[in-house]
Image (cartoon, rainbow, N blue to C red; front, side):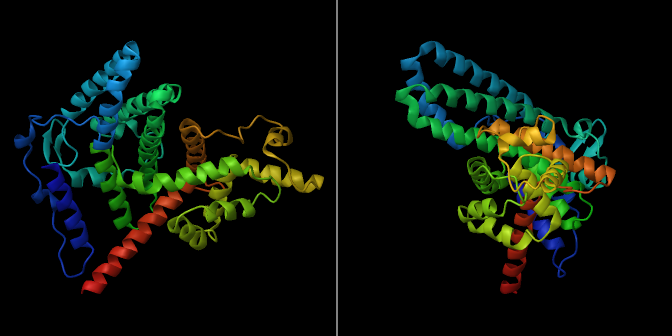
Length: 372
């Protein structure tokens, strides 16, 4: 039922973008909540790829290390129980008569678009979204624990990379939720884009499995890996050579992003923060200090000394480092926006996903024009 509803939403959105059609209230496409009170289908805690991985590895762990097998099985049972609890909450993709009144996907999207409070939105988000996020974080910890265990068991080493990939991909689902919320709040963006991001957010909250994660995650992960290994010199602070080296290793989508958006001051500043691992304010201070002292370049290990404060300009390849530094850049960007300060008001991830959305929209429009 949910997937039919999703298709109807997308159809109505496309119709609304075409002058030949009238806008239609999408509420008419959704079933009455009375038909959806019982959860007849078992919630899916793992996707197909994850199920296959666990079905392959768990029997092997049981043979090699029974106590560890029972530990992991207990964790999976707990995750399953959490998934079933989440499934009992009303779907975000259907019409429901709730205690506070009627709720539809349209009303949820409208609420996301209209609500512009820059503070924490936790208490304004649907309960299912919060519970689903808890499930996702628990899954990330489980995949990560499994990967760490496998890495030290020669017989299971072939499973290490698949579990590591699932850990990172799940982390990106968490990150992309933040990006969607950031972009939805951006009133400078076209309303049709903001509504599209809001719909994508509903789909993410419903399943915590997002196509954008699969498309964007490999690119950002590769950029992160290259950024870690290139160890840029803090001289001009532009990182031109590092950026070129990164771009040479990337796919066409990233190269197009660099070519078309690096002239945008906000994108350039966000890229500098990403590359150097310090804030725009710290970059500005360090640039001034180096200029005054006549020093052409320094390494990452010297940044703290010149700034006179401890900064983590270096970071490992661990997914937690990626997410932690992203949240720092995100919070800084939000603060600059709220206080009308100079510097990037979005993260590099915001700019990149916005660019991907723009290109997808252009392709849709061109395809529509070609068929007409």
